[in-house]
Length: 548
Image 1 (cartoon, helix red, strand yellow):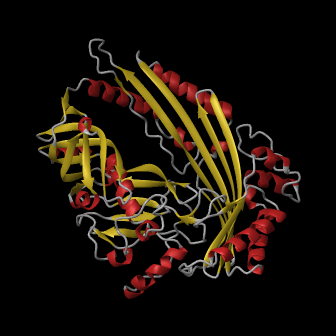
Image 2: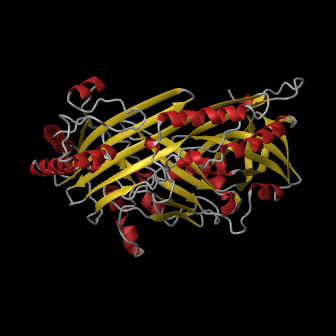
Image 3: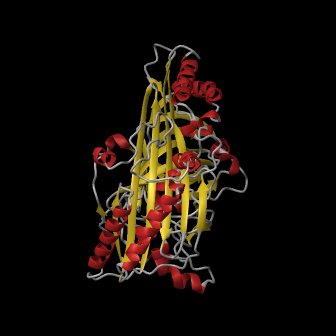
């Protein structure tokens, strides 16, 4: 699907009257003249907090919907977004602010889309005209008419429940925290270097649809990284150094993401682990098949690279073929439902956009579908897909035959209003084991095998096969041993998940953030995978140094 995006520079945008004042660490607009208007000082103060809540924004969105319908669209939806990003890396700080105004229209069963960074009534007309014109042109070709699943009209406002808005925290305070953490870590002992970076995102969204829905949302994301390089204390040991990373990945939280991270409490354990790791013997990889214990990070990586992509209905149907690839459940994904065993009976995977800190979490998707949780894989069998309103229509018979409510699963999203709405990944949750085992318990269950931590995984364009690597260690008689140098693992997706022998419990499950591209033009998806450690039987291990 092509889209019509009006390309304007930041200078042009500011010259049209959009606020150009520096955010000064607050990430808010301070000058609204010639842009949008408010009727009172109190309204303007609220307006600067969440610009998207101003009545002028609602008027723009509803005007664009109305114009698109007048011009012949049988359905239209309009989105306006304001995205604010702030970064802190040492004493270096950065602020970025972006606006988007997107109109999507359906005419004769075909989509058209146009977008711009300008918010004005004139732009509402231009974008609506362009979107309808494009939809009419697209309808001239041979295509399958777009049908939309039913939806309830929704209205309201929702904000990610954060304790502390990170944009209310003065930049000086963030820098002071950053310096203090780095200084205290470096003083823990000689030979420790640190690098800390923070990022804070806030996106305000307004959506109006010709079904009658109008709602606004504000989504926060906070996180970053803390790299701690621990130099080897023994000068005769030439193994170099290791850089553990504190768990401060992006999540839908506010400034509390950093305040509650217990950074200083993590340091002794990180240093102790680094010292222990560097003292371990190193052995060459021995090619063969082994029972492998994956830590939770590695489990999440495997879910992300295989199951999450396989259950994207657009990939399975081939409509993402020229972008991110096709899925192993194609070319007839409907036939696979309830019939295709993608893993062992202990494999269960659900999806949601409701988990408290999940990066895909919202109250409504960009089509107004209220969020919920649903199963994708049950007892190893694929039972559903990630869907939007137009994708769900193809599953209507499957749902009806099983007395399941026919609806979209609320996966319609876009990076901003500058991009067309398409199916984006939700959050994913791996089913946990009943006996509540942790990583070390799973290691005890393996007499002779391999443990893999922090796996990095890649697959072919179909997600049918792939390879991975990570920190690999021997398991001997249920205990972790030497570090394995140069090792990697090979897999085919179905064989890998059918080799699932054991899964850790709730205490060992963690949330891992991911992002990946979708669509053309390419846009980014951010989401969270919740997973536990697991044992995969008879996994192929190879020597990476021998690959061409």
